[in-house]
Amino acid sequence: MVHNADCDGPNPWGRKGDEAHQAKIQEIKEDIIARKLTPDFETRIILEEPGVQGHLERAADITAWDGDKLVEVHQVGKALKDGLPVARERHAMTDINTIIAPLKVIFHDKNN
Image (tube, rainbow, N blue to C red; front, top):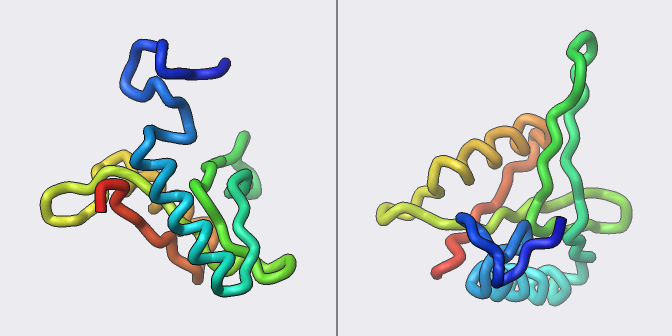
């Protein structure tokens, strides 16, 4: 299923996000490249637990790689007035942090 601006619903732009979200990801991408790392937009973070049927899977907005080593995971989204990510973003970050420890997700407010 492809989402576009003609769709109804909370996010007509799909997983890539609205224009502000995409602009922030582009800004992060440029920073990653400037630091001689490799950006990736397709990284899926997967946790499979022994004895548990199924798995937890999250898509990171953008990741940074040094060769074949994951060094950064970035999430872009809405923040509350105090700067904390909204609940949806916090839940996603908690899930990803569980999988990538000791790395931590770096959150970026799409509007700042």
